[in-house]
Length: 249
Image (cartoon, rainbow, N blue to C red; front, top):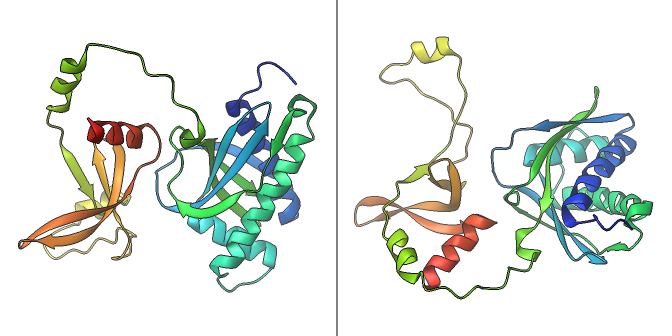
């Protein structure tokens, strides 16, 4: 195995194998193209990596894409149950992992069984559109699960006062209920009483952002006659680590 093998290299190779397996399962040749990623709740799969490299690869599949993929391989027009989607995605990543460890450069790598759930893509994930012409397309994001990477050893420092000063800085916190894209002509016609569909269910969690960075998700509540947000989920990755560290100080 190459000395340059890392979790990042494994994640990149897994993306290629997932493309091949998607094509095989959907009955055509699949292509993959990089895509932008707007973090939202979808299906998550965590693949344990063992052997010469340790950690987990995080695979995220857009909710609508997972449904379309499962419907295509089951050859049904009805919406598949969550259990069917979870099974379909588990089989997809299992076959991709099998092909991955068969590569010569990953001879010292072993893959465990993937766990399936629902949540946000891992921080720093790369998004791809995997498509089989006239069959289905899937938005997938793949990256290293930050929770599985050991944190660097703490370095003693006397800069506690500097950190304290930073923690007193006020930052604007934005609660985003949803977003949409509209033609300029439709925007020009907006007026009092106009309705805009933002494509979000009333029981879906809202996003909490600082700038354009998602830090958490929550549910809208009423506090003393005012609107508030109850935190239900902290964003994964460096943002979550920073928040937990700040709370412990």
